[in-house]
Structures are given as structure tokens and as C-alpha cells.
Image (tube, rainbow, N blue to C red; front, side, top):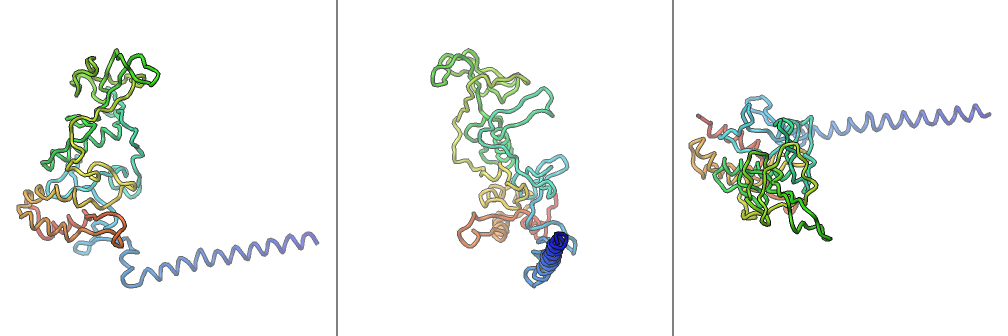
Length: 295
């Protein structure tokens, strides 16, 4: 009797397994595949591939880096936002940097390969590079003019509130010696450069806002990576500061470039979700098609 009950229970479980396998393992995938073949959905289901002369050159959903083999920006192309996916826009390594707003102190080392930049210094360096490339002011609050985080370690006895009233040592923790610190003195104490490998966490970490305007022409998406590292879009503001460079490189008018930017600018989804955005991959392909680079 017990054996019969045991057999019935296992036969019921086996039938449930077979039915669910047929539904979820065969029926559902086949149904999705059939729906994906409907005109208007087929291209999206295949990955929104972009083809040129019958050859797939990318996807409208995945960004690309428009740089040379040394990572230097190609002057004839609009530049994408930074990417933390592998070596940049690697679909097999989609990821964010996982650095947060408290990441403001670099890890310095005598070996350049072992240096780890904080989020602050990363943003500062990118902003300076974009500013230099596009001919705009890339300075930002809490950044030095050389493009690193303007952060001090103020060392000395602390009061009840954790303040260092009488510092004995002040170090610019993101400027490795023999660099000249961005500040000469702080509270009457000479600011020193940081010795690679030294730990200055014993001091009070003080970011210095500086005199740079918060209304920087270099937008946020030009200096920060997306959560996936694959975003093919940039903001219209970032595209706008690149127009002059593209115009000069391709020897065309700014109006011609702006018309293409407008043609590849999408508004807010459903009219209220997200922000307007420019698809860089599609824009650069259209540039090559209409105004080939002859440099």
C-alpha cells in the first residue's frame, strides 16, 4: 500500500514536470519567437543591428568607443560617454565602476600601474580632457587645475567635534610628489605633496571646493559612465560642445552638423520619462555617409 502511494506521488510529479517543461521550455520560447517575426518587431528582436552595405557594424542599443588604438579620441567623431564595461563598451563585461560619492582619495603608488583613482579624480581628469579637446572650460568644483581631486588630509590633535584646530601637517593626498600642491598653505600650515604608499587616513579628509563654477559647460554624462557601461546615448548638451570640433575636422558648416544632431536626437520616452538623448553610434555613421572624413 505504501509503495503504491509512493509510486502515484512520483508519477504525478513526473507528469507535472513534463507539462511544465512543454509549456515553459518549448511552448513559451516558440511563441516568443513567432511574435518576434511580426513586421516592426523583427529588427528589434534581432538586436537592433545597424548595417552598412549589408554588413553589421553595430547596434543602436550598444555604444562604441570612437578612439584610436592608444585610446585617444578621434577628432572626426562625436565622442560617447565613458564606459566601465571591460576596456570600454564590452557587451560581455557590462558593469558600472561601483565608485560612490565618498570615493575622493586616490591610491597612489610609485608604480603607475598600481595607482587607483577615486571617483572624484576620475571625474576631474575626464572633465579637463573634455574641456581641452572641445575648447571649453573643463574646470569643476573640488578639482585642481591639473585635473585631480582637490582633497587635503589635515593631521593634528582633534577637538570634541572632530575638527583639527591646530594642524601639524597638511597633505594634498591626490598630488604625488614631486608635484606642487594646488594650495600653498592651509590654516597657516604649508601644504605638502603626497608620498606614494603613505597612508594619510589618520588626518581629517577635507575636500576643497575651489573657485570653479558649478555651472560647467562639460555635462555630467561626459565624465561619468552609465550603469551598464553600454549606453549609446549622450545628452544634447554634450553633443553641442562637440559640434565645433566636428565642423573643423570634416570641413563642413556648423548648421550641417547641428541638423544631423537634431535628426538623431530622441525626446523623452512617452513625453515624460527620462531626458532627451542623442544616439552617438547612429549619428557618427550618418556623418560618415553624408560628409566623409578626408583627413
